[in-house]
Image (tube, rainbow, N blue to C red; front, side, top):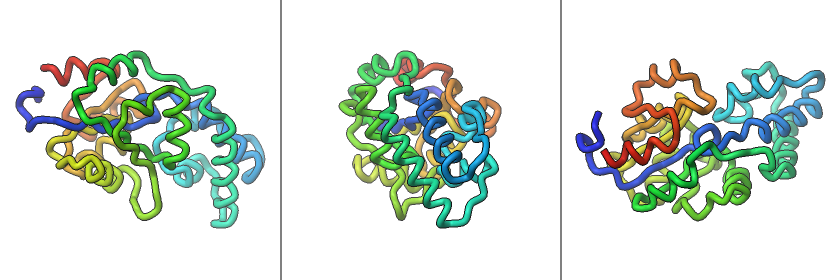
Length: 221
């Protein structure tokens, strides 16, 4: 699909982890500490954890073999949050070309849609100087289903006063693409993050790019 063949895009929504930022090491440190504290034993390695980044923490834990009662799950989540906050995104890095690309896209309204809680997202955005680029930060909050449900995408669009056909959702996992589709946006998959290319292609995104900087070329075609 050529850019000119679709309704005018005015708003670009970006996922955070795996799309703008390689955050696997900070997430792994917090996850492994919470695992050792609450689950016990040897925690999963960074590579195994990275395969599940983008999912809610409780789902990540379950898929990695940590089955906990509700009270212990609550303790796990609290331990994770405290450790993640202490990390202060020290090990997280921007993917190549992110700042230059966001600067080049300044004529668009930019929003962020992440599974992270808002406070966790802001830690990363402040550390990596991304806050000024985004007119709205939509994190996971009570009452909104997380991606792949469309709720957080629709909430971001409502805050930005944008109708779904005028928006592009950019993300690295099937959940991002499915959420964008369910919300009625155009979708763009990035292949360098945590999602597998094959799984992304199965979701049939409108666009597929191998580096974030390709967004500039894409939006000018």
